[in-house]
Image (tube, rainbow, N blue to C red):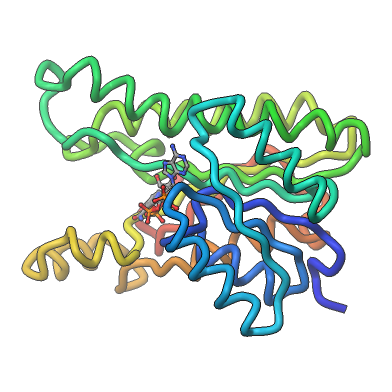
Length: 252
Ligand SMILES: NC(=O)c1ccc[n+]([C@@H]2O[C@H](COP(=O)([O-])OP(=O)(O)OC[C@H]3O[C@@H](n4cnc5c(N)ncnc54)[C@H](OP(=O)(O)O)[C@@H]3O)[C@@H](O)[C@H]2O)c1
């Protein structure tokens, strides 16, 4: 039997990047997967790819900074697929450029904190009550190497929001363990998503690669494999961890 057979998994931000790879891997391992985002053509593309490969998927659109939209999505998922067993709160990103703190705008600060920390809080707030009722579930949040160790080039609001996600996850893990629910966090280093392939100048790649004891950058699939393990029953006694998926560039 596949490791996620019979499970319903919601992967937020799975219209592209790490989330799309995670949704595809979960479906490959038997889960019914909810492909989520705001870009409907992009998420439909991921859903169709999963279905063509023989998997089960549905699409869901919601702005995860708006609780009412997450709640409406949760109700739709429960109607179509049933209760959510696995939540990967992946949607997020950095909404300011790196640079000195005093040059960061208030709007930039709020965008990164809302789009990462608040969004993760709101998503868990919506999904957790059902998990508690059923006394089972696995929650996986996504931090970043930027939130693990200070680096002068890291965008400060993003780094702070991601560090917040780590302790949020750990306090949730401490609260919900007695309900049979696990909560873990994955912290990727630079991942070669389509977005990063466009963003990172080719001339910078060798120096970036060189920061990693494993001499390459990560792939979306590297992160997806970590999430799969944490979601599976193989990880049944693992909760409250922050798992660095970093090719050795982060060692804490
Ligand atoms: N890539 C990296 O190197 C890296 C490294 C460390 C951590 N991370 C973290 O890993 C996660 C995924 O990163 P990625 O690079 O794969 O991202 P990406 O390619 O930019 O995709 C981001 C995803 O999040 C969704 N999203 C963002 N804000 C949203 C909102 N308010 N409401 C609904 N959906 C929203 C996007 O949906 P739509 O576009 O459809 O709206 C998209 O599906 C993020 O949390 C990121 O911070 C990434």
